[in-house]
Image: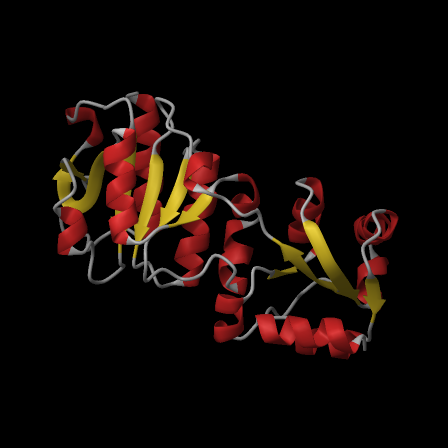
Length: 256
């Protein structure tokens, strides 16, 4: 194996290393294609013979090599030891995700910013990023306590959304300052919140979603001008956080 690249991939799969690194591991044909399409910088890619068994995979390999990306061939067994999934489709790569800042967040009317507070499940974080991008959000703010954007499960669930949609990390103090400086109104989601159609939509809006079990922290809830929710059938417990956020973002766009 290409020892340096393999070591880097294994390091990035450990939580502490992900916190120290600005790099991310991407697996599978589609996610690597997305990385190429948006022009991310590649540290390299490890491939197995399985990649060349499909025309699409062979094209991807050719695109990587044609773009000057270092491509290292390994056995399928070796690739399986590097992958976080059971079906990595013959490719695992290391990329440098975009370095977004608060200036990249769009505050146009009809493009609310989605804010995550303590969403710890990587699959939910990834689904929230994908949903926000699909529904025209102006970006995503990640407050402390969320799963990391570079977590392999977040990357897979987001399917490249974080490569195209600004995703910014802020602490609560910096977030509060951003709200005040930019004149952004904050709505906090809640199980019994007011339906979107009954609220007056501000020009600049951020929608806050919280931890799957504990909900939104009291300090953040105090910053919200309103609580917003999705009416559900009697007897239903709750909606998944990504599903609820998707419905609210869709309704916000409809009533912009």
